[in-house]
Image (cartoon, rainbow, N blue to C red; front, side, top):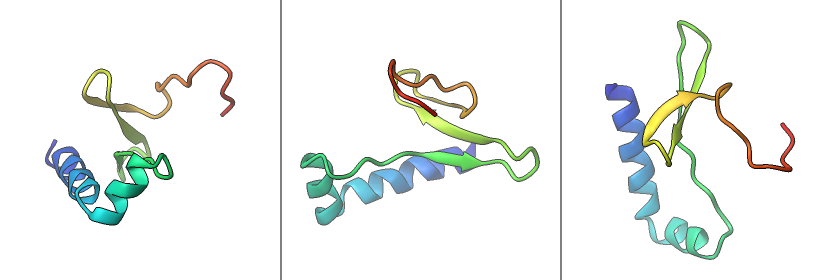
Length: 67
């Protein structure tokens, strides 16, 4: 849980950097919060909708997108 909280905090720090903030506002950049579990090999991604980390394998792509 502490690793996940740290990832979210670092993502927020990046968003506050002027050049990153501008690129986000201009639609030139997207930030994602991911955690790699060394023990299982799983990648967990922060889901904005549910506000929790979920397995990348569980994540649903928008209609029309290909993995």
